[in-house]
Length: 199
Image 1: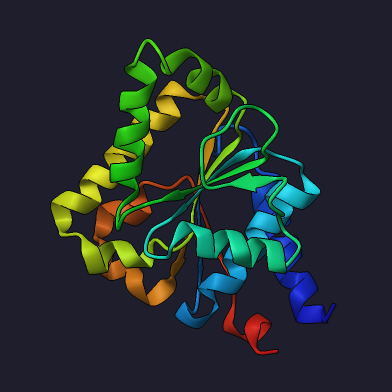
Image 2: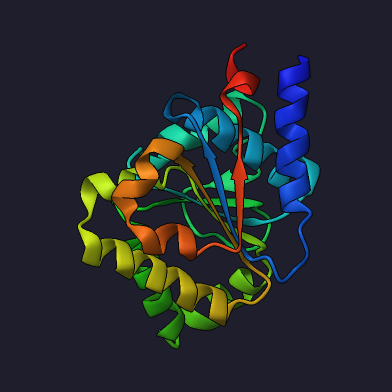
């Protein structure tokens, strides 16, 4: 591992070791490195910390994300699934359908269903993170109301599941398009310098 890679991993580990009150983290970097940082954050959460959670992909096929995570030894088919399954899977890969608000809204509706709600609620209470792979895409697919709805749904999810943290990754140049409320939503911002991503 190069010195730059180790610096990136240490910065991410430090952010993920934040006190429990820090529940909304935004990791920013140059746009070309978002996928690389997705993998790094997922590796720390799943492989190192052995946490369970939800990985929301905004604009990639969920099965494609599962393939990437498996190929990079972050989470294999035995650990990850594109279906919310009973205990045993470490990671649920969800389609954001261009906005995590759509996925979270469907999830909250399923929890209210007396047939599927209790087991799903128990699964979610055991999860520790809600990771969004590329917040930059929100601006491309959503207007201001859609972006506000996304953060509103995330806030509802965090209120209902206090053991869960929201972690989002974004290209730093995309943040102005998300509006001032986007960065204000987070408790902690983590910047990955360009010079750490040159190798």
